[in-house]
Every structure is written in C-alpha cells, then in structure tokens.
Length: 198
Image 1 (cartoon, rainbow, N blue to C red):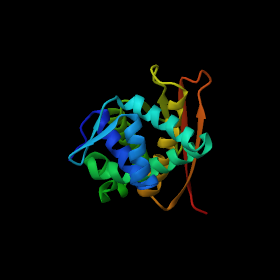
Image 2 (cartoon, helix red, strand yellow):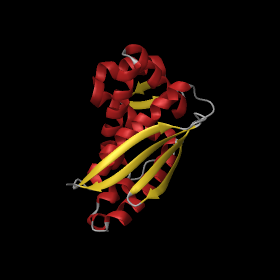
Image 3 (cartoon, helix red, strand yellow):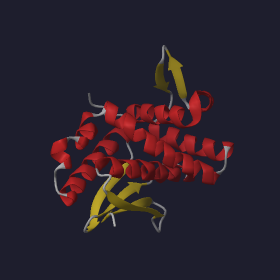
Image 4 (cartoon, rainbow, N blue to C red):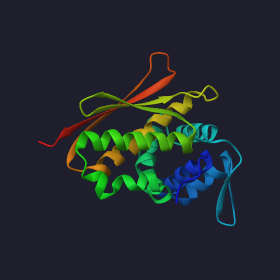
C-alpha cells in the first residue's frame, strides 16, 4: 500500500504518533481544539496539514513549554517512522535486504533521497536532500509563507524521524545529527554525518 499523496495521510501518521507518545486523552484534547475530528473511528481534518502542524507546535508550547514541545516533536518524529513504514511501501522497501546490502554511501544516498521525496509528496512541506561530503547529508526544509514561527518546531519532528531512520537503516554506524536555521529564517537544515563505530 502507498500513502495517498496528500497532507491528511501524513497527519494521520502524526496523530497516531501523538496518541503513542502522549496518550489518547491528550491527543483527543488537541483534536478537539485544533482541527481533528473523529467519525466512525476514522480521523478527518478540517484544516490543511501545514496549519495543523503549526497549531500542534503552538498547543504543545502553551500546554508545557517551548523546550518540552521541541523534545516532544523529536519523539513524535521518532515514533512516526513506524507508521510511515506501515503505510508506505516505498519507505518500507528501504529496509529490504537488497538495499541493506548496498555500500553505505550508495545506501544512504538512495534512501535519504527516497525518504525526502516521499515526505515532500505526502506532507506538502518543501524538503530537499543534498550530499554535503563523504557520508554527510543536508536535509533542508523550506518555511511555508502561510505559517508562523511555531512551524519551526517542524524541523524537530524531522530531526527525530531522521534519527530513527538512520538507526533503522544501519544500526552499526554512529550518527551525528544537528540542526540550524537559515540566516533569513526562511529554511532549516538538518545535517547528518555518518561515522563508523569505534
């Protein structure tokens, strides 16, 4: 099965992760305030994905604090890989033996490109993946004009997702993942450096 190429599929993944991390009660509290509704055990959306992710960042910041919200977004990202793999064959296939047997450089070049392309298709966020050096990659997220500053909790979601993804793809390596905003605050970059374990 392949996730439909729209933001609601991505948001179902995020909502499932929210239930896993914070529990059904907290997820439902957010749902009631921020555009989720449930009918016959199906999740529906009354708003677009970009706005909903922004609202989730603001809601978590108000309910807890901004630092805790960033940490929760990282945990949501880590959790979301499981749901993405279940719902999308292209992402799940990156764990196949044919891909795992590729040399590390080729495996990560290919796999990060596929993950970035699929997430751009299903989330609607502008994502590019660039090779920055030997076993070093830059995952770039373009800020959406219609979003406020809370959207920039979004990189923490991708940060957690990339942590989990890299370990899932090859647990025998050491990963240095860092995040920085662009000078114009129009984009964010997550740097991924792959090293051999000592």
